[in-house]
Image (cartoon, one colour):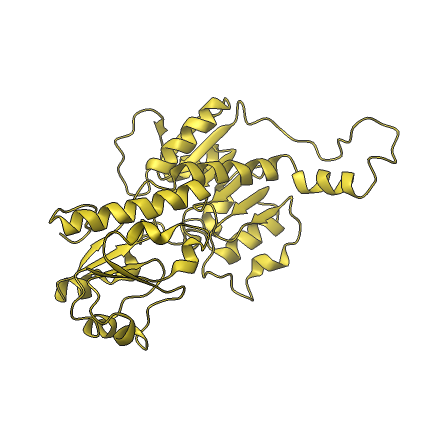
Length: 320
């Protein structure tokens, strides 16, 4: 079986891709499969592994032997499922591999903001702490997560993990089911408006859909507490960036931590670039999913999908 692995740079060149070589003849590309290179790169290929490559009709036409597309990801909107169906190509994704990593990063962003870590780190490194007589510095007060109301949008695997951690810190967890339904009974389910009004912290763990696109807009920010902190590790387009900029600069909410943006990479004219105060806004470049352990699981899950396909089994196929 000929296997082509593209988008290798998006998962990291520190990973061991040799795990696929026992499955067949493997060719690796750091960059994406495109309309221009597909005919050459996919000649004779039966399996294509991608992350950010956008599958088009032209790519599928150029790869008549292709039988399976595997995603190095949970999302598969880039795979063009209707076109794959028309060409008889199956699409397989992976799920759950990044849950611990994303949950951990959620709280890394939150505590960085809650305790003004950048401010105090710079205070020490500048020499100001060594030059003062007092034993501590308390110029920016901080609060405990214990006793706060922690709101979650999207109670899937990651949302539940975050809820467990927030509960361990002593927070009261409430959640809004962005899909309109959830069978989770461990935490209080509320309406979107109630979540906005009650929450001290809100973190986003929902997929991007027609229901969630620009869910956090001016109307939403107007209903939040002025002391609230927003964390987005879901999808960038769930939050309207201009409205978030306005909310932060006008003091409608206290702070925001983002790991996702729209588009990605960040737009050069994004209004968020104007906010240089890291006690108000913290942005990381879409890395919450990417602990070494999570990326290792990612590769292993894709391998299991390929093995299942070779054995005539359906594993994580999104278009059965």
